[in-house]
Every structure is written in C-alpha cells, then in structure tokens.
Amino acid sequence: MFLLGALEDGSKHGYELIRLLEDRFAGLYRPSAGSIYPRLGALVAAGLVAHEGRDYALTDAGQAEVDDRREELGALERSIGARRGRQGSHALRAEVRAAAAEVRAQQRRVNRAQRTQPSTRSASLDTLRLELRVFAADVLVATRRVDPDPDVVAAVMQALEDARAAVLRALATDGA
Image 1 (spheres, one colour):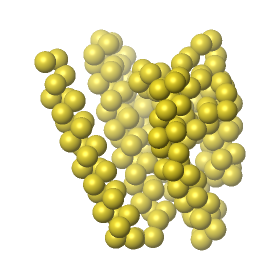
Image 2 (cartoon, helix red, strand yellow):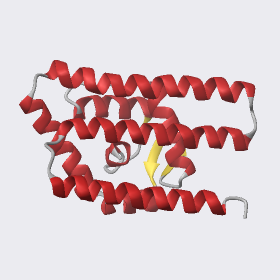
Image 3 (cartoon, helix red, strand yellow):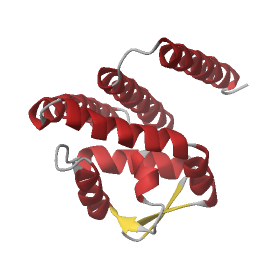
C-alpha cells in the first residue's frame, strides 16, 4: 500500500521509491531492491501500476485503490508515527528489519525456485505465495504497533475472514 501511495504524486523509478519509503519511515527502514522490485512487478501484474522504461506510475485502477484505501494508509502512517513516539527508534527499526529480512529470505527462495522451475505458471504461483507471506508479515508487524482495542481486533478479524474467503473462491475457480 505504501508503494501505491508513494506513486500518487507522479511516476518514479525503483530507487526513488526506496529513498521515498526510507524517508517515510524516518530512516528506520530502507527497503532493498530485492524487496521493492518484486512488489512492483506484482503491482504491474495486478494492473495497479504501469512500468515504462525505468519509471513506475499508477494506473487508473491503482489510483482508485489508493483512493479506496486512503483512510487505511493514513492510519498506518499515524500508527508508525505513534509507535515512534512511544518507543525508541531502535526497537521499531529492529521490528521493521525483521519483517524485511523475512521478505528478502522468501524472495531468495522464490528466485531459487524460479531458476529450477522456469514455467510461467510456477513463477506466478511463487509470486502469489510470496505476496501472501509479505501480507502476513505486514499484518504481524502492524499488530505489534497498536494497542489492543476489541473493536479494531474484531474489524481486522472480519477483514481477514472476508479476504480468506475471497482468495479461496478465486483459487477454486482457477482453471475452471
């Protein structure tokens, strides 16, 4: 979601996005090229981002996604700001680095699998698996940043259940 938000004010190349995200996280997290480019590729495949030359830009669908999730993006940014205020930057940096390390490790596994199984279907399934793991890591990191509010927990649980059901429906119809 941060990548889409970062592209809202115009097209950028990958390293510009890395620097922009580092700034957004106040230097506490600097994504690697190995974590940014696969995510950008997934966003391009999903039709949310266009890639031309070195630049990435939001598509109309990407802008609609940002618009639809603007409140969520703002809440995440406020949560990061509040987290920085409640604890030292060292603990937050460690938390974000741990999540990023998991994403990089998973990307290495995907890259190895793609070298041994070069089929497009296998590569797309590996990308799907990577995105699911990235999503899970993002959610787990976010849960460490918030105070346990029963209404928020209930809303997140419902959103996860809805997403789970939608993904299972989509996968059940795959190839049908």
